[in-house]
Length: 198
Ligand SMILES: [Zn+2]
View (tube, rainbow, N blue to C red):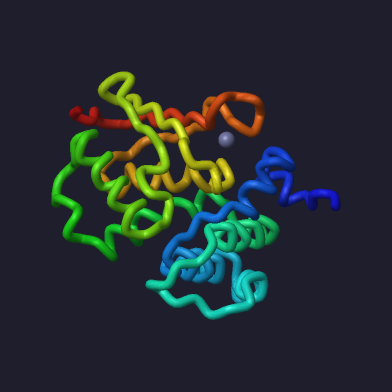
């Protein structure tokens, strides 16, 4: 089966498409519901109905669902012109809304950020731990290395951008190496407008 044009944009290879749509990872329903709702806001009711139809069930916030179904929603969105990166950016704000007790009311250190990311993975997914490594290369440059790869790269880049923003840091996030294009892992660089303490 050939890739449709939007699938070409969202997956970099057939191997990535297969991995994203067949892995056994699970995530809480609130994040699927969030993507479905955002598709309606950004893409209209018809696109939202198409996304809902792609799953064929009504999402319950606290239940666990396949991460592959989360990706299916993002694929429908991309086909309808809604950016995967934009959808990814909403993930961490929703996590903060759900677990406000984990967030101090100030900018966090790198160590604190890593702890909160770990908690997000443990409370909201079956990943079993933080899905990526994050280290400071300079006070304003972060290197993010993906350990888990069930998400399309641009959707993941949006999650990182939204995570940093939620933790108090503005910046730009760019993927600089990709596992699906021959690199050992997907690597992203985040350039922050303010320095992050260790
Ligand atoms: Zn990648």
